[in-house]
Length: 255
Ligand code: MN
Image 1: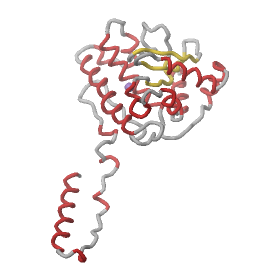
Image 2: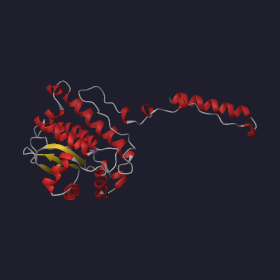
Image 3: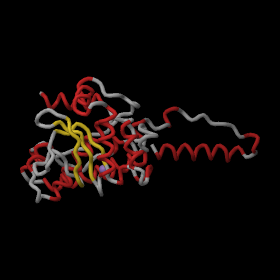
Image 4: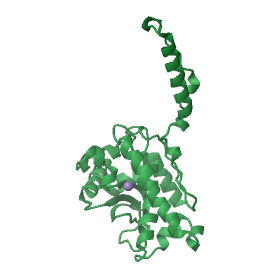
């Protein structure tokens, strides 16, 4: 595609040059086919493909700029194509040739012991980001409906009360970590926090549960746009939550 553009530019320049006198310049209509389609744009999420290995990048349900102005394109692009891809590729390297290659990511996470630091960081990093992207949407300001609305009201009193607690947990994360909404064994909602790339599926975590949604509180998730203003980052994340996806995860867990 780039080559075609260069050839076209060269052709246009040659035409302009050959016209000689300025008043003889005329516009050249660029044929439709010259423009890149969405798939061909160099920085599309579909271009992010891991080296061969057990796990793959799952793609995004939006393009990098689709969550503007709440989450900026540059942050999402770097976050997805560098940070997330990095965790995945390290995970694939770590499990290569071991029996973990045959397991699902959830099986790996639940079976890890607390000494397996590199696997915790990279299997966690892969899973945690998959969930973060899964629950974000290009639709704006959806509100909880169905089962999740019902459970939030039952367990937190109201959506506002839930949001206040979730946000406080995010503001209280010291260093790098995540805040989670999980479904506990007793089918209750609970807000939990983990450090680094740990998550509530790991057996050694004190607060366990099945992850329904999460927010990345690592600086790479917000610093470019929000600097140290975590509060605005969390508010803007809330504007892009897909509550249908959260309901889907509740379904998954109850089946
Ligand atoms: Mn991250």
